Image 1 (cartoon, rainbow, N blue to C red):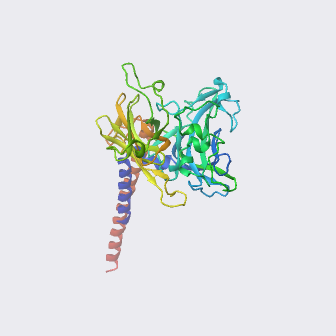
Image 2: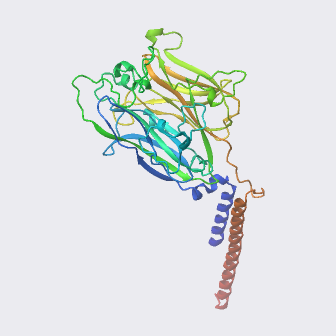
Length: 465
């Protein structure tokens, strides 16, 4: 009977497997998770100095793949993580582009000198022209999940999407500020123009008189004020980034990347369509303090809301916000006020990397159950960004990053359901053959068992026992 019971257990296991959705039943066998760790080009920072460079043709996994996560942090030459209170990671972003085969692009090339016929943007699907990155975060990078749940992935290297005669490459932008010995660490991280003694942008154009701080004042090689007499060595640093991925196949459903910006100046009109050309995303803004404006009825919280008409539809798979110090959270709502996704900051409480007091060290993410949050094309969504107004802030951001799938996983129905694809038919045929074989083996095993038992009983009778 032991053989019979074992056969039944195997049969039950196969039947359970057949009842699972296709993506869950075969994900592990067909999609092996791969991981690679890369380093950015070296950059050297001294007290108060700034790194904001664009590195082209950086290392990235090859082939037609689906990215499952992308994480990063700043390290020194020994591989030690660097805390935010020493080197503040303002942001890092990774952008896809296509370059004509045979055209050499070095790590440090300026895209403005590229021949337009040799370079094609491979931006995300979002509505802000100047926010085309595929991946990117800021100080929160160490404790913010970037995992894309199964069976989804961010597609890269699709031969069908690469223009003829071109190849896919990736650009990395790292914006880091060394605040060792800074007179005002927060002011340096918020790029206050007076601390950098900046009155013109990096192209020599005068700044607006009312521009008090932001990206225009902390560009590459600028210098923030440090305490008189403070000295520290210049040191070599890297952005270490870790990518996990699977090979792209039909069991992986691609997601599209959309980034919303609270400073988007889009306004609805009779002729508006919600396309990129209609959106003006300024990326950063300032927060006035309660002392300057009065406490009011807002509890000293700056709340900004904008309405956006969606030029796309699909299912929300993942969402996360990007905010700077002072941020208290961001959310995405339907027009009727229904919450779709919220993201809240985690502030550090110590000194070690990943827990630096006063800094945002993580943002919560949302992972709606697939199919429960659908976005309809043309639907109006509300983006909200909240900041504390206890003190004045410059150059803050209110971005919201979402992943959207065009379709949901197609389950493998019960055994009597007709399976549509040839591959699935083959799989089911093989499994049914296995079931039949196990059934035959089980029947034979039972028959042999009873025959041996019968022969044994007959033998005992023959010797008079």
